[in-house]
Length: 230
Ligand code: ADP
Ligand code: MG
Image 1 (cartoon, protein in one colour):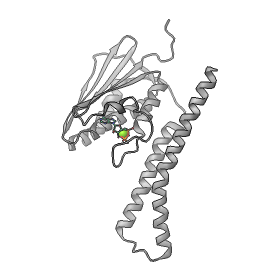
Image 2 (cartoon, protein in one colour; image 1 turned 120 degrees about the vertical axis):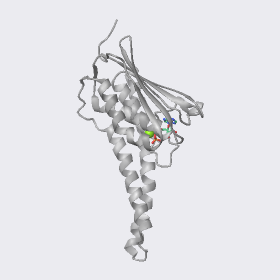
Image 3 (tube, rainbow, N blue to C red; image 1 turned 180 degrees about the vertical axis):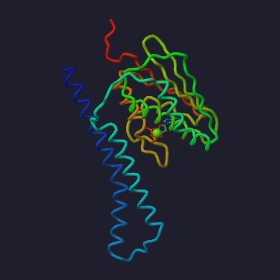
Image 4 (cartoon, rainbow, N blue to C red; image 1 turned 135 degrees about the horizontal axis):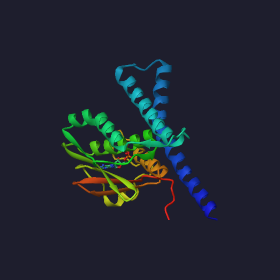
């Protein structure tokens, strides 16, 4: 029965996801069909504004599909021992320019020595990129983001703390559900991808937030995710 329940839960999630995807992709598609129709009839002034809209809609579909592939594709996942310190440093390097432009300082706080983590490096990088991007996007008035790494019992703990707009309380435990976004150009898929990645590493993700003050995301990753400890 447990298996059956798990399977039906999976199907429900899948159904919801499919419905969401269909809906999200249909809007830009409908608008693209409209523009294409106008073009075909030859009475559309094919100005830059039209092509811009079309391009934007296409980009949006592409983004949605891109993020979905991260969760959908049964990629050849390759677990190996990797340095989480190196990953965090490279992710910060990647997003630092964007931060500087927004007058945001990213502080990286590392431990002297951290054990290598048995993980899929590309997935963990994606996880931290998604979290850092959300932090950056939440801060329109500059400020600080603290990315810190600590060790605790057989776990590595990474926190991303921002001084952004925060998240309303009633949304907190629903984070990770697809297509919730408060951003004009958001996909609402970033956190779903994060949750999936953390789960595949047998870890936990936790959100704390105060509206108007900021948000702290805590990711706990077991160093040996597949070893049963009695
Ligand atoms: P997206 O970034 O495309 O909107 P996400 O799944 O990454 O999708 O995030 C979903 C929503 O959760 C965001 O639109 C935002 O409202 C909220 N959120 C996530 N992280 C933060 C954060 N650090 N600060 C404030 N709001 C956040
Ligand atoms: Mg995001």
